[in-house]
Length: 551
Ligand code: C2O
Ligand code: CU
Ligand code: CU
Image (cartoon, rainbow, N blue to C red; front, side):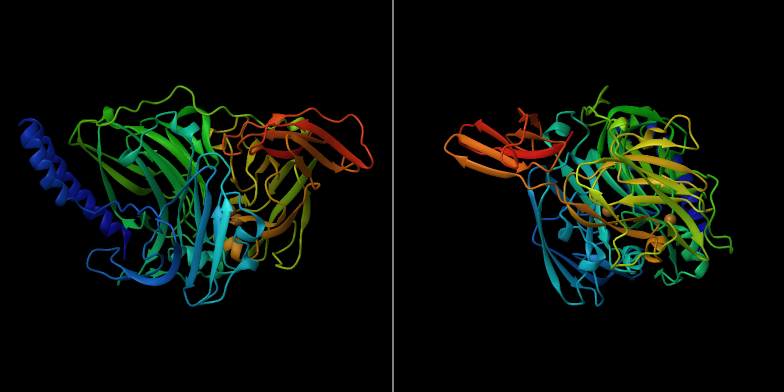
């Protein structure tokens, strides 16, 4: 299918539609609503699909045929029958449990991207299960509110399975975020962007050539939430859009078609300290950005597009789809007066930057091209090789040096990071703000991030989130070493905490409820006793949490 024919068609239909709406405008409100309803059903393209909320139980991944294009049946890999899969919503402090059923006919494992999961729950490719098998996932979610996602992470099949549809939203909510009164309900819209190549019979084509593996597989047909030529009817209120780049390789420069500013309020790891007014944002594969769009500036009966602007990119030099080309993402039809009363908050969640002077070491990762594939520090992924170890709780600088001609969105599991510097920019763009888990490293660029692995010990991966790059070996294993064992002995109201004297530089913090997360420092022992650091305290009975942290 040729993209041009469809977009030309929708542009033509849009022209006649807006003429209709404009004439309705002068004839009074009641008439306008009638015409508006009729116009909606006559609209070119397709109403944006919204994945249903997951209601718990199992996540079954299986081949399915969906009516993605009206009148056609398209073969996909669906989760609980949908593409994208159901939206998982977890409140901070809750346990997430799911049975993953692999009915795909090939190996599979799911990864909870951005969610800090224990090592054997994280979806490392070594934990993939065979066709027909299922496995149980169970872990508490303790991090702050953020828009995460989940997708296939199968050894050398991640790209193909994600492309076929194995992905969905994983949204973490908490009271701190709810207190900002951000747009909610149907004014809080998750949007996942994927680009596809589509055959004449409307089948998704995945047949990467060697060149496609080098650049990543780019498509020329946009699906937003699995909807081609998608549109959304909005009112003249404020909307929260959760943007997820679920594409294998395509980077988007997201903007409104009239160039109006909007507000960036969140990145991978949740809300920023304050909204930033922007006219476009770069969104690389794997990343999430949250924006507020104010439709009150648009008259009822008008429409505006969310689109990806052109930027200098490489890829698709064989005449196929290219990186950095302009693409329409989603058309908003402004159909009615505002409902809801949300406004853009002046400030959001306080953000505590990691102090770079506390960094214990800098790790350099050189991203290079070797033949037709990309390497990290000269090597390709080896499932049974651990590339490096990270002491639990240490602040580290990870420096990505991209010596290649391709952009690499680098993603590490098991921790969130903060961008420290970008060689191509004196000042970091707002997209680099806040907590991140995927950082775009452009061709020729060096990007440094501050990170600290202090949630789960164990074996994890970092990789390029260009999924063809990942599958062709642009990935590493690393092991987060366990923290010292903290022994807690309670007798009545007296509590004794101890850890080995050989472990220098650790202090104790405590809190009543990790979900609320105010960790309080405790009095520290001045000298070890009998080979241990010991803290004796009096606590009323009840639940209390303790942890060791690096000074
Ligand atoms: Cu979204 Cu290891 O990936
Ligand atoms: Cu991930
Ligand atoms: Cu890459």
